Length: 338
Image (cartoon, rainbow, N blue to C red; front, side, top):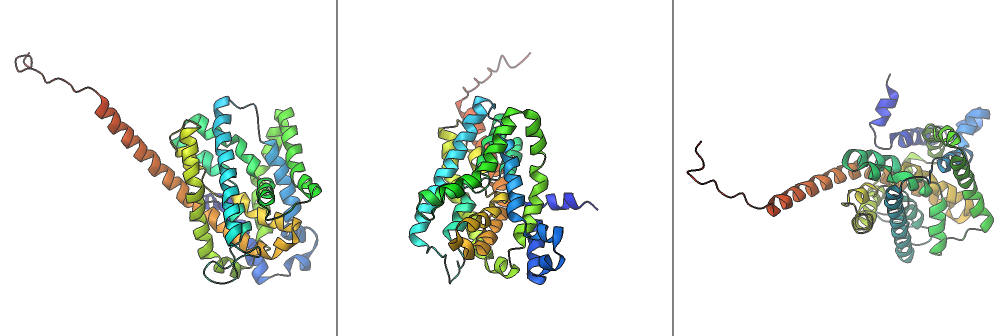
């Protein structure tokens, strides 16, 4: 059976399929972890330790010895995405209650869901899209996007906008594994390669553990708000990213559009932040379901929109080049014969 190939056909499948399996376990057998105990319970309830190892390995993959062009591209996209997510959080905090929307079509929507869906780009999706539609430097621009991984940026944004307050020790505790991995990966390329190989294999494990905190009824009720949130991520982050790519990074906008997605790993951030801020814990199930939906929506639409953007740009450039070329003088009748 080619299960891996089947999962890979689903956008974000490596994260979403185990998450849904975990949600099934939680919905139909909520006491399975305690019943089996030991290692089985560890897999079901081990979100934080599994994520800690994954976050450490993500830090080890960042190589600052990239070329200047790659760093310029990557830095532009990273900073732009962070600023847009900060502004979106600031605006959302003025209209959405701290405990989220309780009734209506957007019930369950919270500032936590908006922040964690907008501040983290799907680096793998971006690299795959730009390898097909961009330059080698643009494809390598995901080198700094790993900084968005984990709760670091979400915590910074929520703290800067006044939505949440994180004690310094908790903030240090959240980013320390990432920083240690980053230091070791840049001190020794062999360690970077060693820990880098662990990044993708750990994704289904923390996806399954995350799913075990979600009731399938929450996913059903969060479907429409999650789809709208995914579309909002593309529009709200995509437009500034396209402009930044064209005006600052010197691209044609395709890299910016390719970065307007929600990372699968962002699904973990509501749960991590909920562990640090007890008042956020009731928001975690709905926020996790919405971010997962946004990840799926952006993973489907972003490659399609990027391809359409590149084709239209290429057609326009070809037309402009044709119009700018000097007209070919007509061949005189007597010169036309040999």
